[in-house]
Length: 316
Image (cartoon, rainbow, N blue to C red; front, side):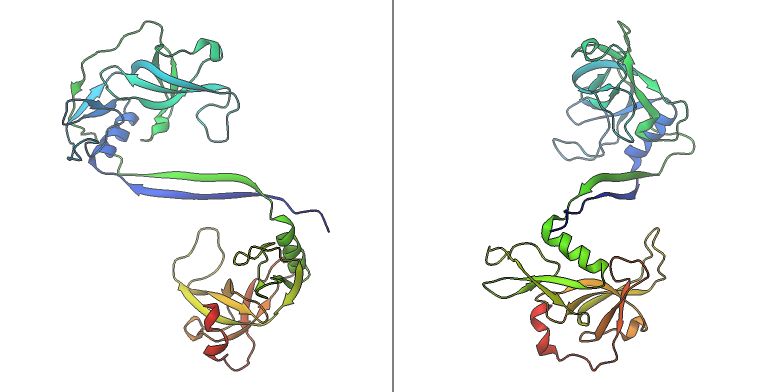
């Protein structure tokens, strides 16, 4: 058995959302160096502000300005910062109740003295980012403030600014190492040789593609390798009309479930070589490999007659 494969993988996408009047005022305020909170129905000042009262669920529109100084209510030391975090040297994650607020704001505390210099109850102030555009990152971090005090009473604020921020784009990213295991390593190595390898359950005789190393129905190991395909049958499909970022495929295109000959369940793949509006259930297809590709680039019609529905109805 060859060594089990591993690969570093990254899942990332930009999450775009529009802002309501409260969040718009809060983020625009940060751009202008002002921290806004919302007064709840019980009189508490919520920072960050919410659009609906967390107790009564009533709509909130009463905004106030709070201080840029505050008190650490709890904290945790981050010895090894990760990519995209506020600081790239060791720092503390802190919950800070700003002066005039009744709830705490989560952010980073720059503490050059290490974890020994951080404590619950310590006074801190906002360090504003040099360039601000209307995001939580306009607060670069917090820093120790000694005995500096801010106004205890929040000041009423209209929440009105010139050129308000109406939307944000948050970059979501997950870095991880994927290990497919022995069964899928065999499957991936076979794909590199333009073969599709499944595994048969010794009890129910179902052939799993891709293989899982065990039958999820019978709960027994699947040690018998079975080569399936290369041709197969389209069991169901969808037409994609929205172009994905960084994907060099013109829309519309078709993505379908394909039951390879000899397989006990369908896998998915792109279907090309035929107008998108001619793809249909029962269409017989075969894989098309690109030079050096480890998996089929797409599937195209074989020219055979369509498969009878009875032959694939259990694989939908």
